[in-house]
Amino acid sequence: MSYLDPRAGRASGDDTGVPAPYSYGAPEVAVPTWHADEPAAPAAETTTPEPAVSDESNPDESNSPDKGQRRGRRRASGKPKGSRAGRNLPAAIAVGVSLILVVLASLLVYPKAFLAVIAAAAGVGVWEMVQALKKSGADAPLIPLLGGTVLMIGLAWFDGPDALLLGLAVTLLASVIWRIADGAAAFKRDFTASVLTAIYVPFLLSFAVLLVLSGPDQHTHSWRVLCTLFAVVLSDTGGYAAGVFLGKHKMAPSISPGKTWEGFAGSISASAIGSALLLYFLLDIPAYWGLLFGAVISIVAVIGDLAESMLKRDLGVKDMSNLLPGHGGVMDRLDSILFAVPTAYVLFALIAAN
Image (tube, rainbow, N blue to C red; front, side, top):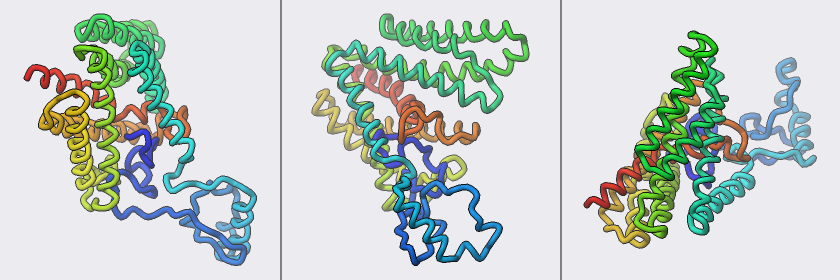
């Protein structure tokens, strides 16, 4: 998902009352205007309902002018109202812009700081995963996973992909030993959760570090990471626009009801065209390679988005956490990027070889 996506922080289609990326014909959640002498339509209200209303006990009251007057007084009192996106849009934009500036500064001003940015994002992502997986009854060991996160990212930075695999193996071994001390039952219950967390977050995100190191010089490796992130943003933006105006055919209704095939086509088109321009002007890579790069990144970004949507549906959570105002958790921002960075690493290696 894009940092400035109007629905950032919400899994696509999880809330069918809010227009999702790739959505078409979703019920519009307009911000109502109330008057003291008019009853308001309950379905259009986006503010948090007050508890203990008397509508159920007195059906006639639901259509009474008094109810409209009460709602009008609530709005006049300055009580915050919801936005069409169902979140605090100014806060979401401010947080999104701040995250983008941190990444840009770490790459373009002091590239070694990018290592700390990746480590911090992966560490928070691991914590969010561990907390979310507890809802399924699994209790992945947090301390060995956090230690393994730092180890994997550090080994990737100093010694490349082979060392990254070694770091993953050490992390899984430490998690097994940590849980064996609690007995065989705990080991069987938590081993899958530990493997999922270790691979899904720090291992995949460590490819962003490898992507930095894969460039022939500082200028090139910084732009490789930024081109990958821009390709994901273009994919999200193109999918949202195409889905709103053209989307008709549902893509994965059981996982993300808001996505359509028309929106998916918009994602691929926007990412492919934008990447062709970015790679040509920033990295001097032929346009046909840029088209391929953008299309593939868009596909894996959508797969990553769907994967986290499915995980959150299975766990029964809306967001991985509430750390980022208007966005949810760090994992809600990384869902598409996690699959995109290892794919970009392979694609740039393929482009360099040809």
